Image (cartoon, rainbow, N blue to C red; front, side):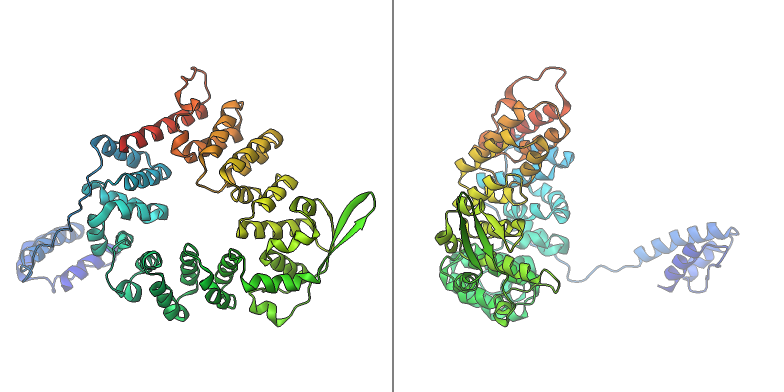
Length: 480
């Protein structure tokens, strides 16, 4: 309607700069506004009349019908007390605890109340970690809403499609969900589907799909991963190299070990530590084929050496000594931090506990220490962190705690809570304690930090830790 467009333009520009054109208005509206002398009053009155005119002149939509309801969900809703806690979580804006609550609801076999799914979906729009657990507990109601609101399409990601439409035509979230499900239920079909569309996938999606493949990795995946080493996208190459590192008999490891063979010697010296002598490899086209791309510059040789060591099976080093022996040797021909960082990358990829333990003990405050601790078995994780807590300064230990891979095992959670309980008030301790209270596993929530009454002069962070542990314990009890 031209009359409405003219009204909007006049209102935006102002009546001093533009006069309202009444010629495009219906005759009935012109008759009602002819006597208005104030231009601003005339615009507002005309806008009200035109609005009513438009509403009154609309015809019913033919063939309209009610939407079909969502499919029934046989799971019971969460208990009333848990529903009240959900309202508190939404009001307090604590996304990390909300994610834990959603996962606990899914594990207990409940579903969230349908009337709260929209509010939860709005939270999940801006917080990606909430999407998967919400889709799991929203069920059919979430699917119904996600199909009608593009902003909530992630709620449709868990629909179990009976055909390949989700893979061929679905959104990225649905395609990822289809591949994850197919790899578990029909791995041969999933791998065939991925190979068929691989060349047309965007680089970021290729890296994601490789990550999903890594959750079901087998020796038969080696040729596919080996071909991915030649990809231009660094993220795809890095993911492929990481996954091949988990295959102990992969040919990539043998090729890297063969390159490294002529670059490593150990020189013994009487009454003094042995020397590990490294030689930087020369560039060749086969390195590019194996995904080694080093930027031009004076440190190209060191960069190639780092990439080769990182991708070489750690068993290669056995002929030169034990992990503890090697990390204690003097090093020539390569900066010691580069060598240790390369060993750490290999230990993390290959899940080698002996190397991880040796590297942590050699450099407790290293930048890879937290990730290396994640390689260890639960009891060794706990023992190692307890030892580090006695030797590291609070600043270094706090950084380590913040970087420890999650989820934490129960043994590690108890060690960290005991450490918090023994600390004096300190800004960094308070920061670490806040994370610890949110991250320890449910089995640790009965720790004395949560059950001992606090004195009136206790620091605010201590009260916050006790409240978080208590809140989480009650949250799990309500769903058990």
